[in-house]
Amino acid sequence: MVDLFAAIIDFMGTPAVTAIVADRIWPGPDLPEGYTPDVGPAILFVVRGGGFDYNRRVLNPSLYVRMYGKDDGTCIDLWQVCCDAWMDKGNGVTRCRPDSTAMPRLLRTQETHWLFALSGWTFHIKNY
Image 1: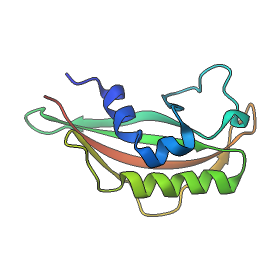
Image 2 (image 1 turned 180 degrees about the horizontal axis):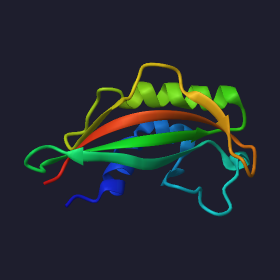
Image 3 (image 1 turned 60 degrees about the vertical axis):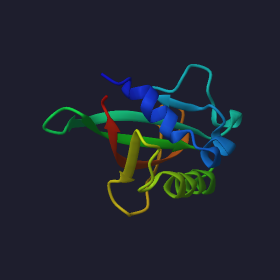
Image 4 (image 1 turned 30 degrees about the horizontal axis):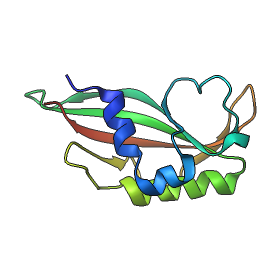
């Protein structure tokens, strides 16, 4: 089976996105120890479910994606860059689309009160 997290991180790491977050794209549920928004914007994703096609050749994970930043403008800007870079595009192995075209929810973490934009995405990843 394909390395799901590696495929997602590879897909998310487009030049436009990494220009903002560098290598700060991580699988969740928690941010790495030591990260703060002062370091720079970051992306944290959590697989919330999904499945695969009838012959198990395409995985269809559904993700929550958190886009962290120092302020709401940074979070929304990162979300917009991600939409432009990811929406309905593919790299031959992976493609994805947002679960809706609505703006993401701006939220704060309970412990640290850091801002993040939360959006849902569905991926399609070749499993061969």
